[in-house]
Amino acid sequence: MTVQNITSKPEIRTLKSFYDLMQQTCEIRKRCVSAILEDTAPNPQDITSLQNALHLLEEIPVDDQNHAVVALDENRNIAIDLAYEAGELRKDIRYLINGEQALYDYFTTLHDSFEEQVRKGVEILSPVDLRSFVSDRDGTVNNYCGRYLSSIQSIYNAVFLIRFARKVVRKSVVLTSAPLNHGGIIDIATTPLDTIVYAGSKGREYWSLSQERKAFAIPAEQQKKLNDLTQELRSFVSTPVYEKFSLIGSGFQHKFGQLTIARQDITHSISEEESSEFLDKVRGIVAEHDPDKNTFRIEDTGLDIEITLTLDDAAHGHILKEFDKGDGVLFLDSELDLALYEGPNLVCGDTNGDVPMARVCAEKTDKTWTIFVTDDDALKEKVARACKNHHFVSQPDMLVTILYELSKKNTK
Image (cartoon, rainbow, N blue to C red):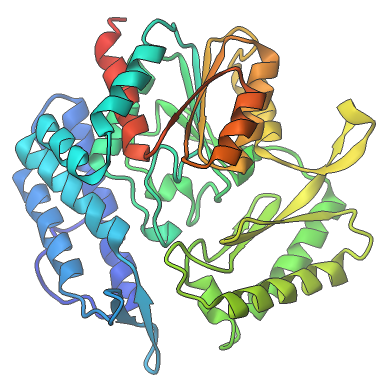
């Protein structure tokens, strides 16, 4: 894809032009990442383009909550929080112009105890000869964004992760609940796709290093029921009353074996009453399609409604359970020869949904380490029960910096 340089005009006034701009920054960032990994300087015009992109975002009119206001269509506007998009551009520009240490200095102004937490993480993992790396994306190795399609991976983040993947571990997987492509994880990644395996839909589908999509088999009857439910829910969120839920946060995501519908975003732009009412409506529609509760499981994260096909758990008496990220890891282990039973493994996450990844890896070998990005004491307790070798940091920037610093220490 050939992308023209981004200029300071035209102004961003519609949601479509905003998404188009962010996709342009994705392609430009890919070029910059490739240059840095090849030890060459990024094209100055690309840096200028990113500066212009930041300027365009900063020039969008804002409401009294300091959220950017753009047109959804001819009659309606939508307010969007651009903290991630603008913030990551600022970091990338600083990194490209002033270098790595300037970025680190900037991190210390953004994150309390940045240096201390990075030092401690490096100290813990330096003696470990890691073999496999399995990680969640958003909130773990990537900062959270209010909208998935504009959560373009930043340049510094891509460089840090790739250097770690190439120099420290033998196999790397980034596993997310989001779709794989067509609006999924590989469409917003700026890393080369020849080093890290990206897996979507909780690990049901993945993009191989040979650039092929592969997937966990779904029974035909289940797939039909999911397709029918998807069609009705897509129509439901297309109505004017509920369309906003397809535009905030995760939006409406049709994944492989799963659906995700946002009911709230990280800035809580929807009232709690309206969000709860929407959740009840979605639950009602699912119940109509699955009155016996044999086909779907619903998880409410507080932000997203996750609707997942059940799995026959033969290991525990053929009970029906939700396909979780632990199941995804086991599938990928068999597909990619991760050799998780050998270890040492590093597993990273930030939510309850990521704990099964740590648990199944720790069950494979006690040579499993985990770092979770959280300040939640209840989650910390769950992680500690799942994996004895555990550590916690407060921000994704801390985790990716730990990984990058480990790459500097590794001489292989």
